[in-house]
Amino acid sequence: MLTNLVSMVGVDSFLTAESTAAVRSFNRFGKLAWDRTAWPFVSRITQVIPDVRVRSVQVGSGGASYTSAPTVVFAGGGGNSAAATATINADGEVNGIAVTNNGTAFTGVPTISFTGGGGGSGATATASMLTYLDFGTTISEIFRVTENDPYGSGTTSDIAFKNVYVTGASEYGEAILPDRTSTAPVWVYYRAPYPEYLAYSCAKVLVG
Image 1: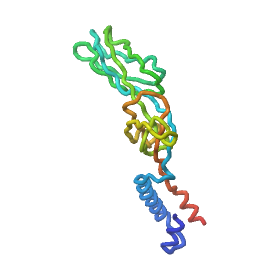
Image 2 (image 1 turned 135 degrees about the vertical axis):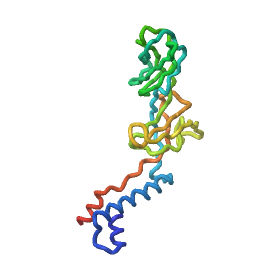
Image 3 (image 1 turned 30 degrees about the vertical axis):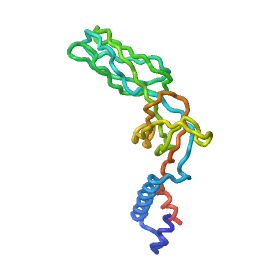
């Protein structure tokens, strides 16, 4: 692309600043076209295993006699790394729990218990789970999620989802499946990430 642009302009080569500006324009308008079009060669259907995580924790009973916020403990459910912070009110009751780490790889709902809290007791809580599809570095946007292979049968069962960007394991984001709490594989129709035109390509042209 840069070689063609140099020829169209009618010069032997670009200055460094000109090359940088050209690459910036290639990426800006290339990604704009990429994101607006579900071209067959950038759109794929792949089977993906979802990740079940803790979405929120609801207080069932606030208990009594807490003089400080107790520590929230997650147990069971097959997952790991989930964490949350409890708060108490003026009456010494647990009145809220904020999830600080959703955890990962849960196969069931973990149980919630409390430790500490200055002698308080009786508080109970229940975790709510949510299923995620992390885009990683292979997905930029999801168009459709189904229970079965759309090419493998005459009918398909669609799964509701919501794209969430600038989260997950990469800058691409993730999708939430709000009506599903299963790790069973799903079929995902998605767009591959934009293959950015890199600046080092300019150097090759200039040196040549």
